[in-house]
Image 1 (cartoon, rainbow, N blue to C red):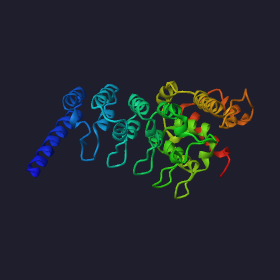
Image 2: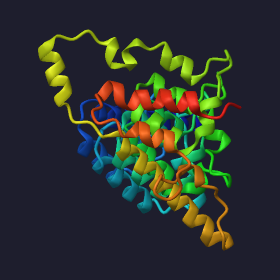
Image 3: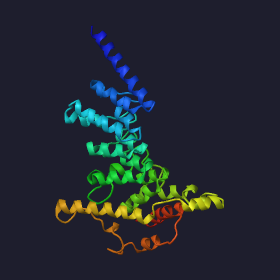
Image 4: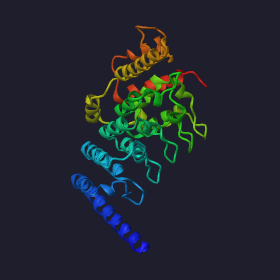
Length: 317
Protein backbone atom coordinates (compact mmCIF):
# COMPACT_ATOMS: atom_id res chain seq x y z
CA UNK A 1 0.00 0.00 0.00
CA UNK A 2 2.83 2.39 0.93
CA UNK A 3 4.63 1.59 -2.33
CA UNK A 4 1.46 2.39 -4.25
CA UNK A 5 1.07 5.72 -2.46
CA UNK A 6 4.72 6.55 -3.09
CA UNK A 7 4.36 5.81 -6.79
CA UNK A 8 1.26 7.99 -6.95
CA UNK A 9 3.05 10.92 -5.30
CA UNK A 10 6.02 10.52 -7.66
CA UNK A 11 3.70 10.46 -10.67
CA UNK A 12 1.93 13.60 -9.43
CA UNK A 13 5.23 15.41 -8.89
CA UNK A 14 6.39 14.30 -12.31
CA UNK A 15 3.28 15.75 -13.90
CA UNK A 16 3.84 19.02 -12.02
CA UNK A 17 7.43 19.21 -13.23
CA UNK A 18 6.47 18.48 -16.82
CA UNK A 19 3.69 21.06 -16.90
CA UNK A 20 5.53 23.91 -15.17
CA UNK A 21 8.93 23.35 -16.77
CA UNK A 22 7.33 23.00 -20.19
CA UNK A 23 5.44 26.25 -19.75
CA UNK A 24 8.61 28.04 -18.64
CA UNK A 25 10.63 26.76 -21.59
CA UNK A 26 7.98 28.09 -23.96
CA UNK A 27 7.91 31.44 -22.20
CA UNK A 28 4.36 30.87 -20.98
CA UNK A 29 4.99 32.38 -17.57
CA UNK A 30 1.35 33.18 -16.84
CA UNK A 31 0.46 29.55 -17.48
CA UNK A 32 3.17 28.44 -15.05
CA UNK A 33 1.93 30.85 -12.37
CA UNK A 34 -1.66 29.73 -12.87
CA UNK A 35 -0.64 26.12 -12.29
CA UNK A 36 0.73 26.93 -8.83
CA UNK A 37 -2.31 28.99 -7.95
CA UNK A 38 -4.34 25.80 -8.40
CA UNK A 39 -1.79 23.38 -6.92
CA UNK A 40 -0.26 25.01 -3.84
CA UNK A 41 1.02 21.69 -2.51
CA UNK A 42 3.43 21.37 -5.46
CA UNK A 43 5.01 24.77 -4.90
CA UNK A 44 8.19 23.57 -3.20
CA UNK A 45 8.80 20.64 -5.56
CA UNK A 46 12.05 20.90 -7.62
CA UNK A 47 11.19 21.35 -11.29
CA UNK A 48 14.43 20.45 -13.12
CA UNK A 49 17.11 17.76 -12.99
CA UNK A 50 19.38 20.49 -11.62
CA UNK A 51 17.16 20.77 -8.53
CA UNK A 52 15.94 24.22 -9.50
CA UNK A 53 12.78 25.52 -7.85
CA UNK A 54 10.06 27.46 -9.59
CA UNK A 55 11.72 30.63 -8.24
CA UNK A 56 14.89 29.82 -10.20
CA UNK A 57 12.82 29.48 -13.37
CA UNK A 58 10.89 32.68 -12.71
CA UNK A 59 13.99 34.88 -12.64
CA UNK A 60 14.99 33.52 -16.07
CA UNK A 61 11.94 35.30 -17.50
CA UNK A 62 13.80 38.63 -17.28
CA UNK A 63 10.52 40.08 -16.01
CA UNK A 64 9.20 41.13 -12.62
CA UNK A 65 5.69 39.68 -12.70
CA UNK A 66 6.33 35.88 -12.66
CA UNK A 67 8.47 36.05 -9.52
CA UNK A 68 6.27 38.67 -7.88
CA UNK A 69 3.16 36.53 -8.39
CA UNK A 70 4.91 33.38 -7.18
CA UNK A 71 6.03 35.12 -4.00
CA UNK A 72 2.41 36.09 -3.40
CA UNK A 73 1.35 32.47 -3.94
CA UNK A 74 3.98 31.40 -1.42
CA UNK A 75 2.22 33.53 1.20
CA UNK A 76 -0.97 31.55 0.59
CA UNK A 77 0.80 28.38 1.62
CA UNK A 78 1.06 29.91 5.07
CA UNK A 79 4.55 28.59 5.62
CA UNK A 80 6.28 29.42 8.86
CA UNK A 81 8.86 32.18 8.56
CA UNK A 82 11.61 29.57 8.96
CA UNK A 83 10.22 27.37 6.18
CA UNK A 84 9.71 30.37 3.88
CA UNK A 85 13.29 31.57 4.36
CA UNK A 86 14.58 28.02 3.86
CA UNK A 87 12.75 27.78 0.54
CA UNK A 88 14.03 31.17 -0.62
CA UNK A 89 17.57 30.01 0.17
CA UNK A 90 17.16 26.65 -1.56
CA UNK A 91 20.02 26.12 -4.06
CA UNK A 92 20.18 24.20 -7.31
CA UNK A 93 22.82 21.51 -7.79
CA UNK A 94 25.44 24.21 -8.50
CA UNK A 95 24.70 25.88 -5.19
CA UNK A 96 23.01 28.85 -6.85
CA UNK A 97 20.03 30.36 -5.08
CA UNK A 98 17.35 32.19 -7.04
CA UNK A 99 19.24 35.41 -6.21
CA UNK A 100 22.44 34.06 -7.78
CA UNK A 101 20.45 33.26 -10.92
CA UNK A 102 18.80 36.68 -10.93
CA UNK A 103 22.21 38.40 -10.90
CA UNK A 104 23.60 36.10 -13.60
CA UNK A 105 20.60 36.82 -15.84
CA UNK A 106 20.68 40.51 -14.97
CA UNK A 107 17.06 40.57 -13.77
CA UNK A 108 17.10 43.73 -11.66
CA UNK A 109 13.48 43.52 -10.51
CA UNK A 110 13.89 39.90 -9.44
CA UNK A 111 17.01 40.86 -7.47
CA UNK A 112 15.06 43.61 -5.73
CA UNK A 113 12.11 41.36 -4.85
CA UNK A 114 14.30 38.58 -3.45
CA UNK A 115 16.52 40.86 -1.38
CA UNK A 116 13.53 42.69 0.07
CA UNK A 117 12.05 39.33 1.08
CA UNK A 118 15.29 37.85 2.46
CA UNK A 119 18.38 40.13 2.81
CA UNK A 120 20.47 37.17 4.04
CA UNK A 121 20.51 35.82 0.47
CA UNK A 122 23.26 38.34 -0.35
CA UNK A 123 25.87 36.39 1.68
CA UNK A 124 25.06 32.82 0.61
CA UNK A 125 27.87 31.15 -1.35
CA UNK A 126 27.42 28.70 -4.22
CA UNK A 127 29.57 25.63 -4.97
CA UNK A 128 32.37 27.87 -6.27
CA UNK A 129 32.28 30.04 -3.18
CA UNK A 130 30.60 32.94 -5.00
CA UNK A 131 28.04 35.18 -3.31
CA UNK A 132 25.30 36.87 -5.38
CA UNK A 133 27.28 40.11 -5.10
CA UNK A 134 30.27 38.31 -6.63
CA UNK A 135 28.23 36.87 -9.52
CA UNK A 136 26.61 40.27 -10.05
CA UNK A 137 30.04 41.85 -10.47
CA UNK A 138 30.93 39.38 -13.22
CA UNK A 139 27.62 39.14 -15.07
CA UNK A 140 25.18 41.94 -14.23
CA UNK A 141 24.99 45.65 -14.91
CA UNK A 142 26.51 48.04 -12.40
CA UNK A 143 23.09 49.12 -11.10
CA UNK A 144 22.50 45.63 -9.69
CA UNK A 145 25.83 45.72 -7.84
CA UNK A 146 24.93 49.17 -6.52
CA UNK A 147 21.55 47.93 -5.37
CA UNK A 148 22.94 44.88 -3.57
CA UNK A 149 25.50 46.94 -1.67
CA UNK A 150 23.10 49.78 -0.90
CA UNK A 151 20.19 47.57 0.12
CA UNK A 152 21.88 46.24 3.25
CA UNK A 153 25.34 47.64 3.91
CA UNK A 154 25.99 45.31 6.84
CA UNK A 155 25.61 42.32 4.52
CA UNK A 156 28.36 43.67 2.26
CA UNK A 157 30.74 45.92 4.19
CA UNK A 158 32.72 45.57 7.38
CA UNK A 159 33.34 48.15 10.08
CA UNK A 160 36.51 49.19 8.25
CA UNK A 161 34.54 50.07 5.12
CA UNK A 162 35.92 47.15 3.11
CA UNK A 163 33.94 44.43 1.42
CA UNK A 164 33.40 41.47 3.71
CA UNK A 165 35.71 38.50 3.15
CA UNK A 166 32.89 36.35 1.80
CA UNK A 167 32.46 38.78 -1.13
CA UNK A 168 36.12 39.58 -1.82
CA UNK A 169 37.16 36.22 -3.29
CA UNK A 170 35.53 33.00 -4.37
CA UNK A 171 36.93 29.97 -2.60
CA UNK A 172 37.49 27.65 -5.58
CA UNK A 173 40.41 29.53 -7.14
CA UNK A 174 40.64 32.68 -4.99
CA UNK A 175 39.60 34.87 -7.91
CA UNK A 176 38.76 38.33 -6.57
CA UNK A 177 35.48 40.11 -7.16
CA UNK A 178 37.42 42.86 -8.93
CA UNK A 179 39.04 40.36 -11.31
CA UNK A 180 35.62 38.78 -11.93
CA UNK A 181 34.32 42.17 -13.07
CA UNK A 182 37.32 42.63 -15.37
CA UNK A 183 36.98 39.14 -16.88
CA UNK A 184 33.27 39.80 -17.45
CA UNK A 185 34.22 43.15 -19.02
CA UNK A 186 32.04 44.96 -16.49
CA UNK A 187 34.41 47.91 -16.29
CA UNK A 188 32.02 50.39 -14.67
CA UNK A 189 31.46 47.85 -11.92
CA UNK A 190 35.21 47.38 -11.52
CA UNK A 191 35.68 51.13 -11.20
CA UNK A 192 32.88 51.39 -8.65
CA UNK A 193 34.39 48.57 -6.57
CA UNK A 194 37.83 50.19 -6.68
CA UNK A 195 36.44 53.58 -5.69
CA UNK A 196 34.72 51.95 -2.72
CA UNK A 197 37.50 49.62 -1.61
CA UNK A 198 41.00 50.21 -2.93
CA UNK A 199 42.34 47.21 -1.02
CA UNK A 200 40.75 45.01 -3.71
CA UNK A 201 43.57 46.05 -6.04
CA UNK A 202 46.11 44.01 -4.06
CA UNK A 203 44.21 40.71 -4.22
CA UNK A 204 45.59 37.81 -6.29
CA UNK A 205 44.18 34.44 -7.26
CA UNK A 206 45.74 31.09 -6.35
CA UNK A 207 48.09 31.44 -9.35
CA UNK A 208 49.26 34.82 -8.00
CA UNK A 209 47.64 36.67 -10.89
CA UNK A 210 46.55 40.20 -9.98
CA UNK A 211 43.75 42.25 -11.51
CA UNK A 212 46.33 44.60 -13.00
CA UNK A 213 47.93 41.69 -14.84
CA UNK A 214 44.54 40.52 -16.10
CA UNK A 215 43.69 43.97 -17.41
CA UNK A 216 47.08 44.45 -19.03
CA UNK A 217 46.71 41.16 -20.92
CA UNK A 218 43.31 42.07 -22.39
CA UNK A 219 43.87 43.80 -25.76
CA UNK A 220 40.13 44.41 -26.13
CA UNK A 221 40.03 46.31 -22.85
CA UNK A 222 41.36 49.45 -24.51
CA UNK A 223 40.38 51.54 -27.48
CA UNK A 224 43.66 50.76 -29.25
CA UNK A 225 42.82 47.05 -29.19
CA UNK A 226 40.01 47.48 -31.74
CA UNK A 227 40.95 48.09 -35.39
CA UNK A 228 38.21 50.38 -36.76
CA UNK A 229 37.57 52.30 -39.94
CA UNK A 230 36.38 55.90 -40.13
CA UNK A 231 32.66 55.04 -40.07
CA UNK A 232 33.02 52.67 -37.13
CA UNK A 233 35.07 55.24 -35.23
CA UNK A 234 32.38 57.88 -35.79
CA UNK A 235 29.57 55.58 -34.63
CA UNK A 236 31.70 54.48 -31.69
CA UNK A 237 32.34 58.05 -30.57
CA UNK A 238 28.58 58.75 -30.59
CA UNK A 239 27.70 55.84 -28.30
CA UNK A 240 26.16 57.02 -25.01
CA UNK A 241 28.25 56.08 -21.99
CA UNK A 242 28.11 56.91 -18.31
CA UNK A 243 31.08 59.15 -17.58
CA UNK A 244 33.68 58.05 -15.02
CA UNK A 245 32.79 60.99 -12.76
CA UNK A 246 29.23 59.67 -12.56
CA UNK A 247 30.48 56.26 -11.45
CA UNK A 248 32.71 57.97 -8.91
CA UNK A 249 29.76 59.91 -7.50
CA UNK A 250 27.87 56.63 -7.05
CA UNK A 251 30.70 55.27 -4.94
CA UNK A 252 30.83 58.46 -2.88
CA UNK A 253 27.06 58.26 -2.29
CA UNK A 254 27.35 54.70 -1.03
CA UNK A 255 30.25 55.78 1.14
CA UNK A 256 28.21 58.58 2.71
CA UNK A 257 25.35 56.19 3.41
CA UNK A 258 27.80 53.82 5.06
CA UNK A 259 29.11 56.65 7.24
CA UNK A 260 25.57 57.74 8.14
CA UNK A 261 24.79 54.23 9.36
CA UNK A 262 27.94 54.26 11.45
CA UNK A 263 27.04 57.61 12.99
CA UNK A 264 23.62 56.33 13.97
CA UNK A 265 25.00 53.16 15.51
CA UNK A 266 27.77 54.51 17.71
CA UNK A 267 27.38 58.26 17.82
CA UNK A 268 30.52 59.09 15.89
CA UNK A 269 30.64 56.58 13.06
CA UNK A 270 32.25 53.16 12.76
CA UNK A 271 33.25 53.44 9.12
CA UNK A 272 36.27 55.22 7.75
CA UNK A 273 35.34 56.97 4.52
CA UNK A 274 38.04 59.62 4.15
CA UNK A 275 39.56 57.77 1.21
CA UNK A 276 36.28 58.12 -0.70
CA UNK A 277 35.51 61.79 -0.15
CA UNK A 278 35.64 64.08 -3.16
CA UNK A 279 38.32 66.71 -3.62
CA UNK A 280 36.09 69.59 -2.52
CA UNK A 281 35.83 68.00 0.95
CA UNK A 282 39.37 66.71 1.33
CA UNK A 283 42.00 66.98 -1.35
CA UNK A 284 43.51 63.56 -0.60
CA UNK A 285 43.09 62.33 -4.15
CA UNK A 286 44.37 65.29 -6.14
CA UNK A 287 46.21 63.10 -8.62
CA UNK A 288 43.13 61.09 -9.51
CA UNK A 289 40.88 64.14 -9.56
CA UNK A 290 43.22 65.85 -12.00
CA UNK A 291 43.18 62.69 -14.09
CA UNK A 292 39.38 62.77 -14.14
CA UNK A 293 39.48 66.25 -15.71
CA UNK A 294 40.64 64.91 -19.07
CA UNK A 295 38.29 66.77 -21.46
CA UNK A 296 37.51 64.03 -23.99
CA UNK A 297 37.27 60.37 -23.02
CA UNK A 298 36.39 57.50 -25.33
CA UNK A 299 34.18 54.69 -24.04
CA UNK A 300 37.01 52.15 -24.15
CA UNK A 301 39.89 54.37 -23.09
CA UNK A 302 38.16 56.29 -20.29
CA UNK A 303 36.78 54.01 -17.63
CA UNK A 304 39.39 51.35 -18.29
CA UNK A 305 42.33 53.71 -18.14
CA UNK A 306 41.00 54.93 -14.81
CA UNK A 307 40.92 51.36 -13.55
CA UNK A 308 44.52 50.89 -14.68
CA UNK A 309 45.48 54.14 -12.97
CA UNK A 310 43.84 53.14 -9.70
CA UNK A 311 45.37 49.67 -9.78
CA UNK A 312 48.85 51.07 -10.31
CA UNK A 313 48.50 53.74 -7.62
CA UNK A 314 46.63 51.69 -5.01
CA UNK A 315 48.53 50.72 -1.85
CA UNK A 316 50.12 47.29 -2.17
CA UNK A 317 49.30 44.62 0.40
